[in-house]
Length: 206
Ligand SMILES: Nc1nc2c(ncn2[C@@H]2O[C@H](COP(=O)(O)OP(=O)(O)OP(=O)(O)O)[C@@H](O)[C@H]2O)c(=O)[nH]1
Image (cartoon, rainbow, N blue to C red; front, side, top):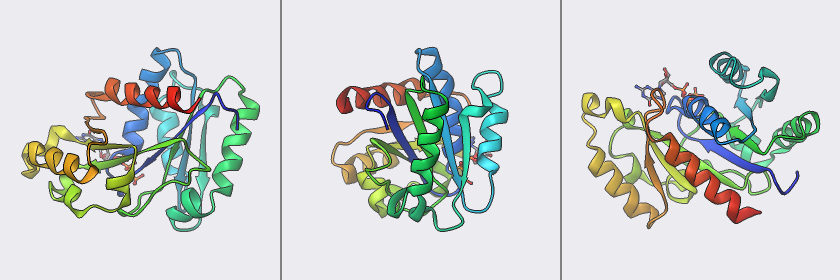
């Protein structure tokens, strides 16, 4: 890995919007002059990689999206033994030396997932408002220790009786002031702020 590449992890429960967040974030990064690439992790398939390639057609070269089939629990591939992901990142950087941002999407997981610091410089944890406003109160390292907690699907909060003020206040409380961002990954709402925070880590890690 080269020092001028920011390596970013994106974790969260199954279906919380990790892929959608990446698909919304990549165009924002490209508009800022960044050259991102994406590595997805699925246990048995390359489903997410295919989705990202399709969704970002014409925006991101499909060759810059790689799917890792972990064959095991997502924690293993991004936390305990990130060998496959390290290899995928190294191969991408070898083929495309201009890459300055590697986005690693973990497989869907529970609340205990974190990323190995060997693999990423910082990581986002994505929650879904439809999982309930109680989620931040459940804590777990993903919620408390991630560099940035994203509360996604804010558009559907009223329909699933999630009070965003309660969810955000509880998240702020359990995270002791670490960043909490609200997003709608389908419209891009909140994504500029996600990109701002990502960039602030680039400064801090180089
Ligand atoms: N309304 C709404 N739907 C969203 C939002 N973000 C994602 N979705 C939808 O939620 C579903 C799951 O989104 P994904 O991005 O596939 O979630 P994921 O976390 O990558 O899922 P896994 O990889 O299976 O764990 C899809 O139908 C998305 O279109 C959002 O902000 N608002």
